[in-house]
Image (tube, rainbow, N blue to C red; front, side, top):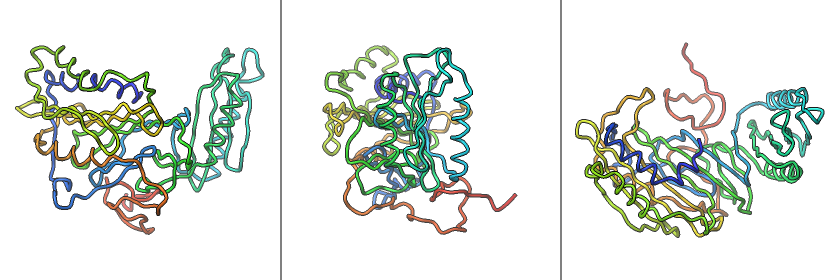
Length: 374
């Protein structure tokens, strides 16, 4: 999913929520720890160089990451032998595939260090102007893949860059909050003091809120590419809805600063089935055109269908939605560095071998888990 395009069209996402007045998808609310105003229990997620606190038990359900223009494809937990076997197979496959003007699709392979391999190859047998550069590295039981499309002339530059990024990779527990400068992505971390062209987009499921999704997008946006401000964009959307807009209740709108980031928020409730309400909350800052002041969008949507497309019962009141939203969005911050590495307060940093967990709970430690029953 192109999450960047999704975020850039935040007003479009809101339009989709408002048009749900016609299809009326409901939402659901539970007795969540975040309702405990005295002592809400939270978990902290690390995205790029930023942190956000969400209710304990939340989980990442999707994500898109870019570092230095390279797409961070995935982290796979496997043995070194499995890693070598898989990368060997990819290299062998590329060597065997013919190209119209070259001996094979594979143009060059390097091994920058033990457990790392970089390949440059043609994606099709007739391509001459572009190459695909893929970088693989295995560390401590986990491997990562970074890739990019580059011009033939930039092949060497791309291969050198990905080798440099791979050298700083290490696997990371979802609950681990690194204390050193660098870039977090799902199950991984690239240690670096230098800010690269960095992007992160995640979707988060909240526990016992099956209809709610929290989406966060972060990417650099040059000042000359700034869009129309959020409030102006959504105002135009409402005007375009005509009579449908009468069912939309604006709960709050205006300027809102989160830490050092000056932005705007627009929070609405829309009709659902059986007199229920769904919610579409957006906070956005377009940044100042620098890597450390990026475009940031945080979206909170209720009324989502289940996996089978069925509506879910609505119990999230406007007051409850606003309370949950304020707690989450106000926690967004730049990850501090220089201290001691931490983990989310919601769970212990390590779980002893042999520990049993209830089915459906998030695994608190990377590795192989198995059922003890047939």
